[in-house]
Amino acid sequence: MLPELSREEILRYSRHLLIPEVGLGGQRKLKSSSALIIGAGGLGSPAALYLAAAGVGRIGLVDYDVVDASNLQRQVLQKTGAVGERKVQSARQRLRDLNPAVQVDTFDEPFTSSNAMRIAEPFDVIIDGSDNFPTRYLTNDLCVLTGKPNVYGAVFRFDGQASVFDARVGPCYRCLFPEPPPPGLVPSCADAGVLGILPGTIGTIQATEAIKLLLGIGSSLAGRLLLYNALDMSFEYVTLKKNPGCKVCGPYPEITALIDYNEFCGVPGLVHDEGSAGRGWDITARELAAQLKCGKAIHLIDVREPHEMEISCIEGAQNIPFGELAGRLSELDSAQEIVLFCKMGSRSRRALELLVSAGFRKVRNLQGGINAWAREVDPSQPLY
Amino acid sequence: MPAIRIPAPLRPYVDGQAEVPVHGATAGAALDDMLAQYPAFRPHLCKDDGSLRAFINLFLGGRNLRDLRGLDTPLGPNDILNLIPSIAGG
Image (tube, rainbow over all chains, first blue to last red; front, side):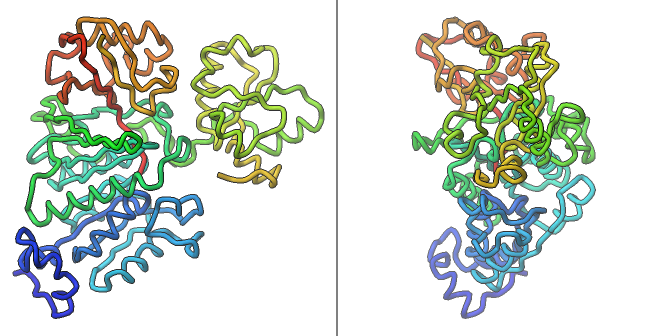
């Protein structure tokens, strides 16, 4: 039995009620339906706002993070005054301000194999707005194992992808990407940047797909991958088919329960702690500053992109962008002490691996990158 | 001349190009030609046995090569192979 709409709700949703594909019955369906959003960030923000505005009765938000000033360029659920607050708390308040009738369930905890089933159980659709591969594979496997649709979106600089992975009727995420890329090969938005509006476009597409699924109308993106490029303003589709060898949704699945996704993706337990190269290969900003002050000869190599040098720099450093490093090893002297750095330490960690594999031994990674340098040594440099 | 379209995350490995013109009558030959031009790209795209890594998909005309003839899929002179990797940003 679907819930009735109040007089206030009839007025609020009148533009929906006028559409024959939605109408009074559809709006009552939305009121009785639910969506879980994994990640209250760039994708989750527009998705949550539009689902709340549309009158989806119950919205779940999973995020284990605080609002950072660098989020505000794209995470439109958040506001300047919420910097430092728990993300899901400020997001819940924003959604309540928008539509007090919507039930907002918040999960201020890491989304893991041990709690994913419990968190997802009451929800009709799952929206993947996460920002890392372990969570994406976890979300996919969860959806396959529980028979829920996975409304997928992902962004990088000017490029976006969207699809609906529903293993009951088509391919799942693993059918398309059986394994994640090697750690570090595909940089994160924190390292590579993202156009602030881009997750708005893709997150809004995810909200659209979720509403269609909840209403049972239209043709979903199941079996298609949408590729959006904001620079070209191009939308392309490619066809996706179920992979008969898929390890989770194929006829002979190897994965029948949730697994350890950090191990599967080859990343450390804390997926955001990528600025370290590991014991013995790191140097802290304070250690580096002390050694430079003592006059120690250190070849500082900044592996960021040239345009990042305009934001902040360490005096005396040579810029060799990571992508050029393999072709410029002849410029380096393996007998000299080398310290590599980037913005936060993940690109320089990969640069260190490249140098070590080329035979360099006197090389270290500035832990936490130039941002750590700005925090601990030279506050005149901005954080970004 | 066929070409391989390179997504933004992988462009640093091909001198920043969005499309790499290639020679080759099949998808595999075209891929080999690109990797001969940019050998440092090979270990990221291919396993030691030469097969494509599982996070990479090549599409031709909107269809996944896995659903066609794989790397033996014939290429016409104006065909564009679309290389689509997994991205995780959100």
